[in-house]
Amino acid sequence: MTQLQEHSTTSQNLGSDQHMDMVARFSANNYEPLPVVIARGEGSWVWDVEGNKYLDCLSAYSALNFGHSHPAILDAFIEQARKLTLTSRAFQNDQFGPFCEELTQFCEMDLVLPMNTGAEAVETAIKTARKWGYKVKGVEDNKAQIICCTGNFHGRTTTIVGFSDDPQTKDGFGPFTPGFPLVEYGSIDALKAAITPNTVAFLFEPIQGEGGVVVPPDGFLKEVRELCTQHNILMIADEVQTGLARTGRRFAVDHENVKPDLVILGKALGGGVMPVSAVVGCKEALGVFNPGDHGSTFGGNPLGCAVARQALRILKEDDLASQSDKKGQDFRDRLRAANCSKIKEVRGKGLLIGIEMTPEAGAAKPWCKKLMGEGVLCKDTVESVMRIAPPLNISQADLDWALERVIKILS
Ligand SMILES: *Cc1c(COP(=O)(O)O)cnc(C)c1O
Image (tube, rainbow, N blue to C red):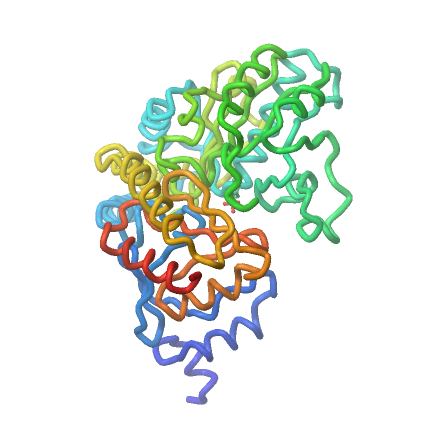
């Protein structure tokens, strides 16, 4: 067997450098990952192919809220995988009904529309809002507008990148879908000014994750709710990253006790093992769909549903929201108290933590690389912000260990 054939049949004996070389040669170059090749994960820890151990303080952008290989999630996954994985929705399956009932109860909403990825769920919410606008609100055909925010991140489809204000996100991908005016994130006056009779929805992240862990001013969510009600506009919260206990509450909108018309979920809904996303919302909006209007081959598949049901169960039974709330607050307090010279600001809610570098310290990426050398994996978001978002069930000892290293590197 030649060296190359050996490689193509087994990855057992390849080192990190060989793996990275293969990726460089055979994969499109749309990511620039940290130079670590992970081969195993358990709880908050991962191991690279050489056996080095790292603490995962990114959690796959909050998709791993339960950590790696959570035993109960794996049990649900394996048990369901042995029974039934996929039917498509041409037929019914025995996981979908219970999933919908449990998710609507968890969300205190009426209806669910299941998809797979976050971006698909965002697209679904957009289609819902437009159809609701035409069929219920009475907006003239093809005139519907959905107001979005500066600094937004809602995914990577052509329609969604069309209303991003990040030049790289859009460059080379036009022409874009019209009907998505932008307003300054966190400004209720800007939102007010942008509303027209053709406005059907306001789509926003209650905390902007990819935008740099940007927390809107206190009271913003409440004012959005009032404004949307007043003008008969759907309030659509993209909680793909902030939902399911990440920010110390069930949803980030729960910090202000407001109820959107539609909530978009993804990432952690699949327990870190399956892509599961959904739009959950009121009957008036999600009730606009008729058979054939919209769909997805894998959306609502029994394997994803079984895993999501288990994820919701763990979320409630282990009270991950209060764990996230306490651990995150404590982390931020102690990090601020350390007065690190490289840090301009520490922000966030729960275990969604943003560390903004001083202008002198520059971009966050090199500091993430230094932290990796200390055994902590995390990721820069916008240029100057380092995001710390470990699994919500991380032990206090492990979180202390991470904090020590963050302080050491950024002092
Ligand atoms: C990650 C993310 C998405 C997109 O999810 P994908 O599964 O990557 O398509 C959408 N909205 C927000 C707020 C996100 O953080």
